[in-house]
Length: 304
Image (cartoon, rainbow, N blue to C red; front, side, top):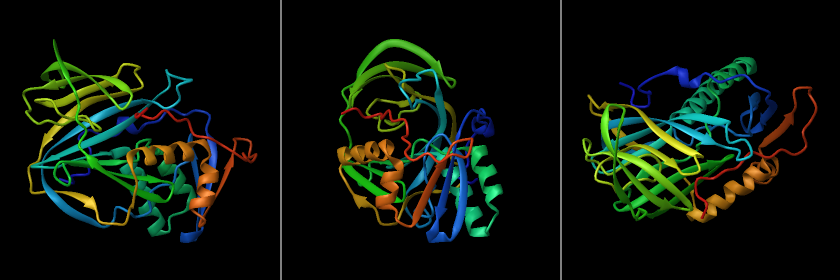
């Protein structure tokens, strides 16, 4: 089994057609012209995850559907993303399968010299992931390592595993066929309600959530901006590693990285112009008119 393959496929990749801005990327470094239709400015990964080193052995994989309010001015407009939590003996890896697919499609077609039209069609089909980071819990031991990419810049945040003060309630529910119990907490500026199961006694969950006496299968902040729901769990049947990119990343703090995301989303073109001189970006509306400045909606999970 390909351990990067989702447990359930592609209904989640069917995107509703809507008014979208046309974004043209001229990636001079690779001598290609790429036209991408997207609601936000984003540059696919061009290979930072090609070199990997094993850090643990995979035991099981949990798939979550993530529902995200990107723009708080339009709270009913949810972005859906497929997330994977790969749990090993000591380490877990959490990442966006949507971003993984977009990056893989882009990289494969660029290497094959595929036409611009086909690349556009493929990327429009799968969409760009909203969640760009990968999180490794308990790597190194007792630490949380987060890898992220903004435009063409790669960053790493290494910090102690967050100490989460949970309140366990008597409420129960069934999630994905498992009996679950409710717990609540406050983390990085948001209040969360989660459902965990004693049936899988692994202290882990989506994003940075952990510290309960069982696996978290559902989580949501009280503003309903971020929601994660387990859609499948699969026991690993063959020997498979959990791997981490063995490439250079700039070390930053958690708050420094959040500030960089804020800066990029406020002015993506300006950020790319300064930090990615080999990439020229042109944004046009549906009428073909240039958009001189465009911002991405920005509603971060971490508010403090």
